[in-house]
Figure (spheres, rainbow, N blue to C red):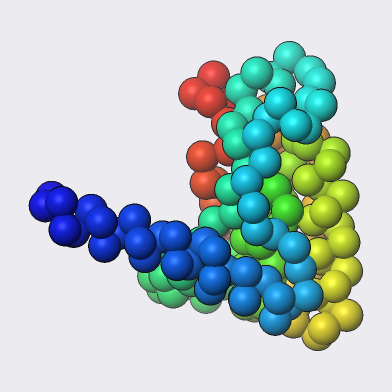
Length: 159
């Protein structure tokens, strides 16, 4: 990859993170931007050291991934492992999934996600039911339904 291509990709990511993602969040009435380090989260439990920093998935990355699924989402449950502030579960719930679930270890990020879910529901932006779990993904009971599982680098290899 040439230096020019690298520079263009970095600029594209920064443009999305600092402008377009924030604008998309504003349209939904949510706060899902920013970066939060594990040391800021008061995490407890045997897997706390496996947590990665929170950076919301870029909206364009998720949109492309969901568009390429090429399946009838009404028959699937969407699960985001490490759902953070909830941007991904809200974007998924704007589509007709059977249900959308998020699993987040941090109580702080989970509380922000609950507020974001309430704001998106009030705005009428959700087409799917949303369930947010505040727990360690290692203890999460994976639904028996057909699944779409999403994860954006939320934890270490041990998990």
